[in-house]
Length: 327
Image (cartoon, rainbow, N blue to C red; front, side, top):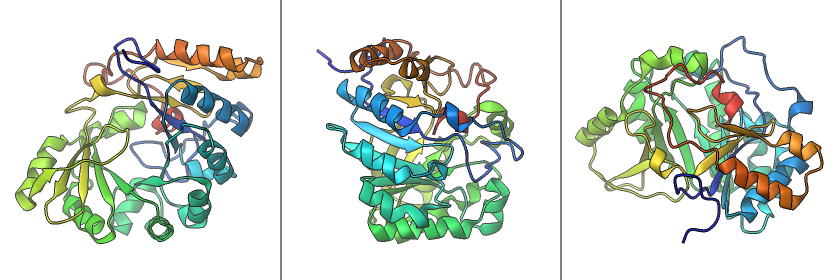
């Protein structure tokens, strides 16, 4: 008999993606419009104490993995202090971070000392001019952050590359070689129709099954396994330590094994990236809910989790931006 947080479809929920801000210091064209300013105000954000309470409730009910995300989490002040508080929660086994690495060089040591063990870095191009076109950012800062993370000993360091047809798909082999050189893990991600920006990038969608076939022509691919709670399906390049994960929400959705939910910075729990099912924790926290009631609220929230997304069937369905939902 299953124990812990079980959703209506028998899936065990043991992974929370925790957004600590909806702000970002980049403007990736498939995520945020260049002139977007409709961010939450700080008084709407959960405080560190409120975050700790909600995450503690999830952990008490069986969650074992938490990934700190955004927006860009490193724009939240004193983030290492929050990480330190979360890392001391009993039975939370895996505390990780997703970042664009722009500010990582300044914070890598403090984050590692606070209990972050592994990180994912968004990196869609190794070419400075193209990186700027995609993100409006500076590639040198990202590289400095990556090398700082490598120096302090984060393991693994995963590179998340959103693969886009006629934008960066000619760089995949280059990214493979880069990850082999630095002992990084590579994860290739399909574009998703989330928000107006995501839908506008639909013309760049590339089925990663074709990418995998292309890689198989150039490298010997063998089965690979990487610890973690995410949806990537991994292969390894024979003769190297490089593992490549394929995250395929469109071509091969992984809804039947979904084990995660997303807590936005304003206390909204989103039960699915591709649906509007949600549960609001902030009003309950600020009304003085006690710990037992908070645990009951978590259980109630999980009953709202839908069976699957409908990205193919209803691409216009999700109006919120990815930065608003949490990575």
